[in-house]
Image (tube, rainbow over all chains, first blue to last red; front, side, top):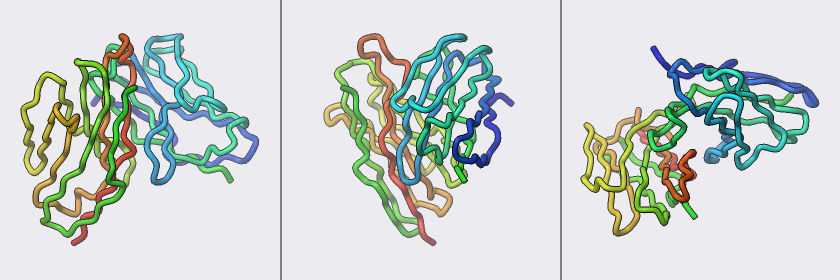
Length: 114
Length: 117
């Protein structure tokens, strides 16, 4: 079945460490997105990519980095510069680089700083 | 600027009650799409419906129905005879082609629905 796989489901990070969250899709979608969700909050866009080797900052890109070397993969690195990284991270994709079709979401990664 | 407002932060109902979740949007464009997503406690967002701006027909899918009214810029979601499994956070979202940029959805803050037995 086609879909988006996010791993790991739970991730613990020590302060000062970089961590990378994986997002892989087999839907042949062009565009991919990373969102952050804090408890009781809505979705905030971190980065998005419409095509391989290209990506744009979202509303809260500071302290995060991404790459898009393959169409299927859009990993997110949470760097030590991100002051409050504990949150739920969601990856999404959409065909043809337009949000008009809506998004397909992964099941999320819950990151906790210890 | 585009904006989606879900004024109801939390709603609590008793099972079998009907409940309506409100969504009001702002856009200058004439071509746009509206969406509803459900986020159960597991966390993954599940697509419920997509509606384009030219189709004002109401939609019904089982116990779910949607009322799209362009005159009031609203796209409300009603659950009939609610069940405990409907407990989730529901998000309304907007995609429009303003200035040719329709690459991302504009999200409301969500409405948390608790259906109690």
